[in-house]
Length: 360
Image: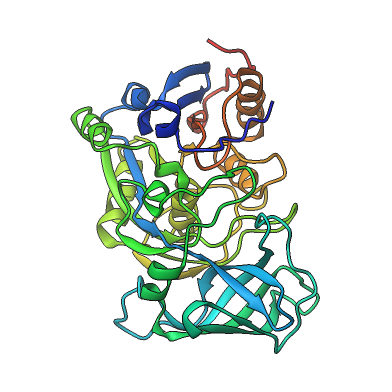
């Protein structure tokens, strides 16, 4: 039986915060529901959330020879002008992916520079060069022309990116978290999806502080071994100060997702002090660059060869991540953006891990 979640939990008779939550700590593994999250955090802990909103980044197109494709608009590549709002979506150079229209699963591998793809309402894109190197076949730099206001174009003609494990279309609202404010993510920052207004209130009542960052997630359907793409992020000054104060007080900094982790770690210096930051990050966390700031992580369940797992291990360690995944597979936790969740709480520095893969 497939463990991929094929539809939102609301369509399975659950609230958003009713999905399963596996809590992995030095003392063992605990099965809970996402609404139980306040039980596993302490007053003074800091929860960092992503305010990026998902855009309708999938658009139907037609190649010059008549073949139909689906265009995934991942990330705008043009430099931002000083003072320009980061969430502005405009014509220009974008990083895009072309997929077969049948199920948006097969990659188009025979595209070439200079080819044009016709889009709805007279819009078009022209392929410029493969990304990130000339031998690449999946991602392209492309010039998109949609009348100037690409945000309005996508609102009319786009839809959320989805893959074959989600056979039915769902409205854009199904791909937004309660924190979504700034449009820009091609694929949903899905770790924040199970939060509800009621759960946020419960966390605050429990003394957990909540602070925002923004990281606009690009296309995440990477091939095995591919590193995550560069992404735009903002860590505001109040959040940077809260992170530093939380760490100084000996409390946890918990990131709601890999996007929050990447943003915070991109804003951290070698000593783990976070500065207000804004721009692009190509940071890849892993064995060569462990986490310096984040010491707790909420995440969904990803394919074993996904680049996300290196980030999880950089925060929680290989042993804890392996034990959590083994337990989740045995217990039938659901994967991907509409699936279940995991809270990784690794040992404090200097503590002796007690995790052995057993469950409680």
